[in-house]
Length: 480
Image 1 (cartoon, helix red, strand yellow):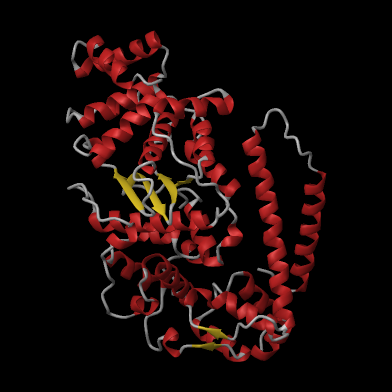
Image 2: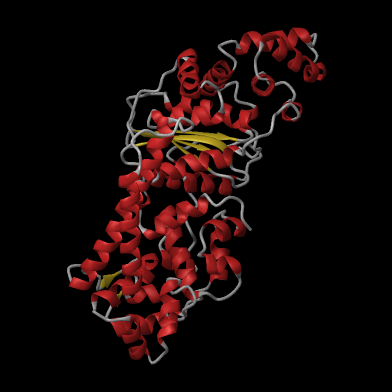
């Protein structure tokens, strides 16, 4: 958001620079860049130019009085609305400082941080100085409006302090989450309201927060017996909210039918750049109009597929950063996305514990076999039987048998190891995941590979400031 004339001039100069560079780009991409990636880069630059144009137009509209920003009832929109109200009133930052009897630099600091360091009393003073009308109940006189209170109330609904601190709180509060932070507390409550529909005032009262998440997840699913039900469902609801944001920020994606024949999918992936890598599979999945959102928070689930208003989005959240694991999960979720193609809404959430005991769920068996056949050239079951024979039916011998079978048949040992682990889990045999992990190859971080492709395609101007902040925080990684 443009806050003053200096930023307006800088933004205008940036736009002109982008426009000159874009006009000078060759229509033919370099030979080492795949056409789809080159097109995604062009689209990203074009989207960035559109966003700069919108910021300039919004500032012009505010200054001309064409934008009405005098009524406000949303907590998380309050800081931005105060800045807009100042501009619309024809006031500079110096003018507002004089009304508040403070230095201009203090107003600049407030606006640069979206009033993150301002007390609730100071925000009241700013709204009065700008004649912005905010409902009285928003301020909740006498209530404990603090970050500590938000963390405590969120914990009662199953959201851990670590999760809220990393993914919900403004950056200033994440540095010192115990400080009072009235403005940050209000913004955090507003963000949680966006995700879960909890009225912000509820956080600062004694009214119990609702803890039913079935509708937010998009499905009522059976959880594994050892799962933390409240956090698992709460996190799945958060992921579903983010999935909706990703779809809104990729409005021009084509929506194509998802093939269910593993040989067709394998051939299409190989045609992209000649390999069956996670990166190639990602490009193929995106080409079908299926968005892919990578997350890296611990626990809850390792993969999910949602269909929202007829469009599919895959969420990947594998704890291990092995490419073969992420490739299997991506293909597994893609197969879920092919289910019931005429339905406008769909939800599959693969919880971590259930992934080790899903043989009784037909859709899971189908998805795992599909992923195995794509990575193992249609021979997943055949090669699994070869491994069993090579190991003389003894699980403890599989660790040496799998590499021999993979080498003899020219398939990736890590992919075969993963399929054997899935296969044994579906049969109810002892967990073989530890042994399969020892056969994985390391390389480029698949989470980073998936995040890069998502960021190339996102048009963040489709989202408001709060939505953008929540989505970008989710893509920050496991920062502390």
